[in-house]
Length: 165
Image (cartoon, rainbow, N blue to C red):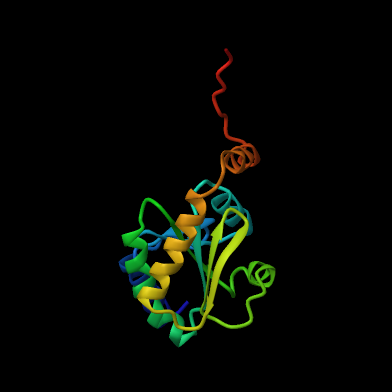
């Protein structure tokens, strides 16, 4: 490998580290704020089946509007840090996931509550729209009935204490 290639690769690695990303062989990466970069279908399924609502940004590295929306998405993610999960899915890394959600144009943001789709927005999305989507997903999650919560807990496989009188 030539010195020029090595320097280029080192420069890219440093840029990734500055953005808060780790090695690409992990199943998901946590960005510098509170977004999660999903790297596999299994990790995506595990994350959406947790009890928190999820916003998913389908993007690609070559997409200009995706790059423009990224700081806004991270800003909203910080605002809803402990209440809503914010995921980023690179459609070139996991094309089967993009096909599952019928992604035809990027960027596309989908709000999920479990496996149920709450909201969807295609194209460059503003901060207010992302905030509204996160609030709708959070409201829907909080309105779940007790039976819905029990079904979700049982589906995820978590133990739930039961009182017997």
